[in-house]
Length: 453
Image (cartoon, rainbow, N blue to C red; front, side):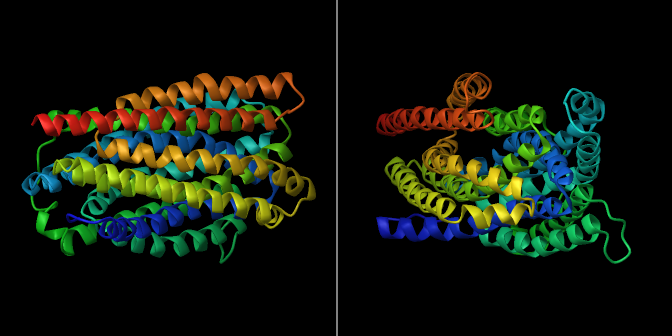
């Protein structure tokens, strides 16, 4: 990261940070994308099982991982404030916290997984796939969380191309092991959707190992000597990270878990409906990586400028990111509308699944527009370290507005399962409006504080 003086320089720097993050996010989600596609080719019950398993895993992972995301604005502001000597300690404590969070999730999951699945009206094959998909997945949770802590450190230094390279190297590994374990190739057992969980776990171990070696051996990361000493765990350091990370994590959890809740509510419909819903949601989530990447880039850029007390520059980055995200979301919406049938055929060869997926994809267009506004604003607010109001906005817009309205439309109107999607769109739109209002308030207050200082 470095100071910029013109809009042209800011645009070039933001794109320099953004492009590798975008490739990284697309690559990371491509693993889930291929899990879903390849599981769907194994059968509708495998696709539905992975859908249920993912719906339980993704909200937990993304929510808890939000705590680790606090490292990005922490490190970015330390760099902006020229306090680089404190970076190594912050990263070490973030790694300790990552391990503790991972162990906690595995422990809790061992007690609650079966009771949760038993409460769902699932066919036996779907329940079996969901259970053992998750069991296989969590064998890689510790390296996954360590990698994400290291990734926050790497990205905050502006070296986002490094995580891009790691992810691009990991993607073919994930696909190969999916092929081996889902379809039973090269002497391996044919495990269907369960094999996708094994492939993901192997990939998590790979990415963590590579990241550890890079931080240890490659400049500019090695000069911080993250592995140079064994540091005692610090409750104070954990608390400082959690003050920022917990609201981020809960905000992400409220957003992601509403999609999971809808998938779980969909379990009352047929396996065909669950599979079609999952296919459309998977593709929409894949495209969501674009505004999410812009969000992550803004956290770094805004955090750097805020740490240096350059609030005008931070504001310019914020609106630049929102504009780019909205324009790209419009493009993505057009892609969904034009290519909905080819997209649907990626996920299944069954005619009923394909036709139902096409209908769900129409509603996914409106997801893109709301996310194009909300996601970059969330990233900018994290750069300002303003996270508590975002948490409240997420709770209201998703769980008080989105899910109840979706439930009513699905169960008391002729919309049926599509009612849940209309409710999600309503919640996302409400969240985008509220977050924009909050961003304006934060920017005004931040500028006033600098003037007073």
